Amino acid sequence: MLLALGVTSSARQHCYNAPRIIFGDEVGPVIRKAVFQICLVVLTVACDSATEPQFRTPRVIQAALGYGHGCALTDDGALYCWGLNGAGQVGVPPAADSCQAIPAPFSCVKQPVRVMPSYQFVQVAAGGNFTCAMTADGQVLCWGSNAWGQMGVEEPVGPCPDPDNCRVHLDGVVTPWGADVRQFNAHAGYMCGLDNEGLAVCWGSNDHGQLARQPVMRTLLPPERISGTVAFRALGLGPQHACGVSTQGRAYCWGSNEYGQLGGAGTWLSCYAQPCAIQPVPVAGGMTFSAVVAGAVHSCGLRRDGRAYCWGSNQNGQLGVAGPGMSTTPVAVSGGHRFKALTSGLNYNCALTLAGKAYCWGWRYAGALGDGYSSATGYASAPVAVSGDHTFSSIVAGGESTCGITRYGNLMCWGNNLSGSLGVGRQGIQAVPEWVTLPLPAPTT
Image 1 (cartoon, rainbow, N blue to C red):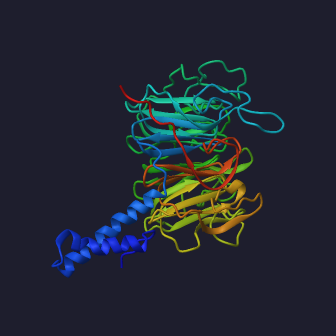
Image 2: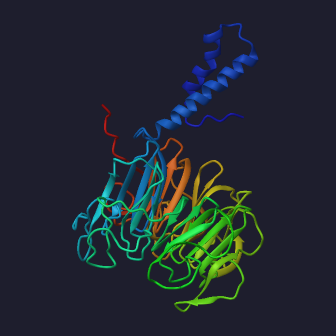
């Protein structure tokens, strides 16, 4: 049966009359039914799209979130960023008093700004307080903090009076690595990418073995392939551990294992008094995954049948089940949903159903789950629907903020906005999705 939600009874009557108006009174029942259904579909799409602001053309095709800032990439290669900007991670010079807070104001950008308009970009990654983006010709440019060498260069470009607040200014072009890297991810103080053979290359801080090699240390390490010979299809990075899906669909994790977030068995090393692994550890259970993501102290994988499984800490319900405080092996997320996309914030996860509806579970801090609730202690141990019944084509989480790209290429965000990290023009907690308005592109002459 065809359902046309949002189509009024009078509109249905127009659709009922349409076959006779087009073909006359002698139109047959088959054609009458086909025209009626086509009319309803057209009206349904029109009514649905009318509820979504048509902010812009071109469309948003990728979003990336760090710890307090975010970026969006459009299909014309333009890059826009916003949020916390103390290290210049937004891509514009920091302004000391642009965000209000106690005890003192700090630098932030509350609305999206165009970054480096002379370049066309094809990929962006947002780390803790830095950003990197790949240009159309394969160059990778970075800006923000380089305190741990996470940009792949030994010395920051530009003045660096404080080693914890290094800045790579936009007048300096930084090429972080010499090897071909076709996709990359960023997190707190390190980055990882995949080279043309599918092997993982990581650089930056290795204090918990997240670079999967020796030595384990907080000082910077240059780009280098991780231990082992596993070829990966995709990677997921957390603050102190990382995971990847191999080309055969097996999940592997490495780095800190304090809460069982590596999901496998092994003989653990000690990384700053925490158990860790400096080579990829197979996740237990032998399941085949299409994606894997990493939070602060948990990990999750999406099986090829759309079922989500999680492992590690469950202190805030981030495994999607009620009960144990942690699990060292994958457990099925409750609710029976089938998902097509999965992402992790620090202590929560969000996913998209096959129909594009967003669900989240875990810690409700700062409205990160998008269901209208915010709590410093509350959590959801099963997926809850994100408010608004919006349809998304992709979803991304970072820190305590989440953004989804709608099927029409618009951007909605929710969660922690105390540093302007949602790009909605103000500070505060946003517990339900809100539209992010990107600046209109400059007219061409």
